[in-house]
Image (cartoon, rainbow, N blue to C red):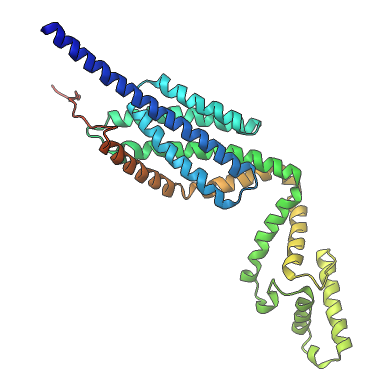
Length: 324
């Protein structure tokens, strides 16, 4: 009877191990599938004509992937298995993304950060007396968020650099448009600096302000005074001021020319500066994303616990204490 009992026990233990390995494989496959989908969505958002609203999809996919890879790292103690699934994601990244050295560097750094993430996560879990989603995953998942920012930074630099080489004038115009939008808020001219008015209206208001007798003189004299204002404007800013275009268009042209004269010698640094500005802006809102991922992790954990994919077990652990 004893050998039969041992055989049954061994069979049960083998089935338990098989089920455990199957669950690890399924979770690893899901995490690898999620990151491949994420690469495709990021590529479409970064290197195609998709609008800004399209970024909601890669952001959502990134959050889901971080949750899945967090659980996979927790239930899979074998680092080589984790390495293999992440390497599959890296290969997919290199296949899907444009062939560019900066994009390649970003992918490699992200892959290395993901290995650091697994080590940190397992260390956090080992040092906790009781399993807690917030304590175990909170700090570790932030590492993956920064890994994503590093990767996106290199991709963004590559994209901006290519765009700048293709059409540097567009960058000057974007900076000029941004600067011109703020002019009404810093101008003391009030209504005369309405950017939607035509240049003809702007010149007339300037003439009225400079010549108190403007409205008392004849129409011919008014045209002469307005023309003198227009000529002075053209001479001062070096553009041919068309009275039919809006003040906004004219000021964008003026600011663009001034920026080109001032910053032209530093053009090669533009892609790097733009990249740092965008990443710095994203960095300020990462805490919102981290909290959203943590909440999603808790919801998925409760679901997987309810369907018995996970289970919590009490274990006896040894601790170190100082004695004399």
